Image 1 (tube, one colour):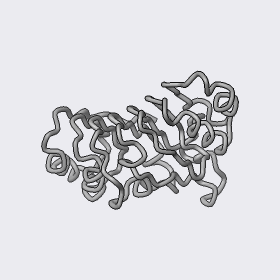
Image 2 (cartoon, rainbow, N blue to C red):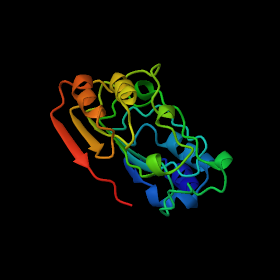
Image 3 (tube, rainbow, N blue to C red):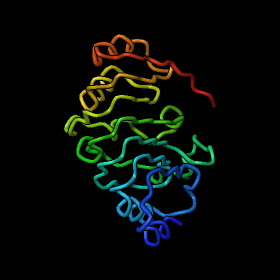
Length: 193
């Protein structure tokens, strides 16, 4: 399906794609081809990491909103759609500012971070990443510690609206205001299973 969108619809550039429910419908290579063919036009993109190991993104200068979910579209978050630890998804490492220079909203919409083995938030956020200065709205996953918040704050220093799960460790909340003193909105969310 994505191959068709990547090859046949180049003349009709897509701006918004929500492929969260299509995880089982295409392979990682098809997704790579699709992203490369629409990297100049996509403004909003929603994906599951699911079984893509690793998922690679080209530079996406026009992308304004990115929603990523770690887990499986079918809701089998505990197993990550895999039979063993060796098969668990290994999300790619991003250079946020270089790959997504105009990203305004990042939603890490997950349940799997807390409930599945094999995923580490540290793979998504590295200190040697180019900062993404355009990001203003951020939803973080549960189970962050103060060091994670400091790293994420280094990568996204201009966050104005932050959505934080209540499952976040208590000692993290003071760190939020130190990391983002310009924060205008803090939304506390709950995690439902």
